Image 1 (tube, rainbow, N blue to C red):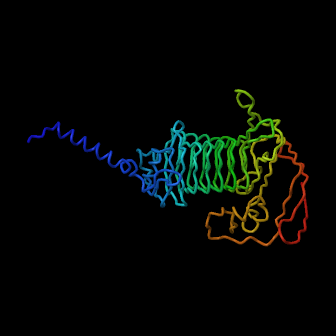
Image 2: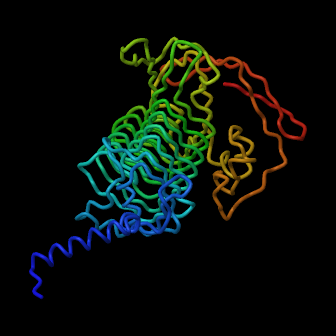
Image 3: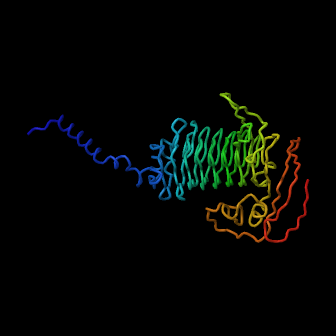
Length: 417
């Protein structure tokens, strides 16, 4: 019997189709260690190649099962490095649980591209327990360690160290954060940009940044440079309903350098007041918004020595109807037992730990943990704060009461200037 080349070709083609139909799941999901990509059974990742493969399934769910050495990405794509997962038109909308494991040496070198980070752009994504160690990320605009642009969604219990470089909207965790939340996370990366440069996020629009800290050295060549955020846009309505750019229970303790509008916590703040109909937002430095419980913009701290910044916010605004509860401290006031006494907005029972240096988050495991001291914590509750801007700084008129939250006697010597 003579078998022609034509028959052999079609036999091989039929065999390939048969194998694909017989084992579809294996051929599609072989690049992951296990799982189905669902919330209850996420795909399992243990290599940097598998990490890159997330880009093929932008709405799926993933979990790390081991530490990942990503240093080889420096040679990928002819030196461009790791390709950020998701972009402006196709955003990541699933979840990644780092499971406490560490990704070391992730490298992105895309100086002519925007939207760079482990995730280039995300939409309502859930990122948690992700830790980038010694990351090296360079791009043009909208650059962050975990996400270039994050719209909605959350980042929780995550961290970034290394170097992050760009021009506009450059941050330790995100470049741009819009209507999202960052909680219980930190950055200790060296961050350099031109404007909208921040230790946690380059810019934050109607978002919440809660229980975070930055030890990042932040450098902005031009303006909007902050220890936590370069620019915060607060958004609200002329009613009791209010959505604000909120930063609370946090601190910054890295150097902050900028040519204009540089602050220990935030470079600048802008109010955006949506109006009725299809009209665009009315951006203005202050608004006629009604007072609401959520109108507190900041309850956080900065190391005025380490940051080199005398004020929390670099820009000058009249804070009408808004509480700006900020305190600049010295390094020794934010270290050891003193942090418990001076940093009253930090919850040292459930969220933070005292160390011999700056406080850390409860999920971290430092070697120098210290016990909570048996001393009173003094809380000054203000019932009226009026802000005015003079030529040399911020003037305050404050009425307050003092409470002792500890279990020892309290003597107060008060000096106000």
